[in-house]
Image (cartoon, rainbow, N blue to C red; front, side, top):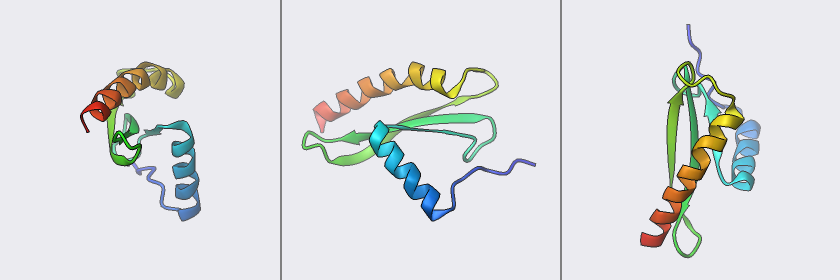
Length: 89
């Protein structure tokens, strides 16, 4: 049976939040759904305030690439989309 790898420990969650802020994005694997990898980044307005987030998921079996490869492929596209959204917010 699949057991989600959702972070429930407060210290681990806080560490992950700090890491995501430093990186400007975050990626997960099988957090809520087996076989899915996700990546997301904040959407900030023109003042630099976070007003939301945008992300995507990809099936791990169909795309047997490492986390690093997935981030390298998806992060530039997410960044472009975030910039377009920032320009209209």
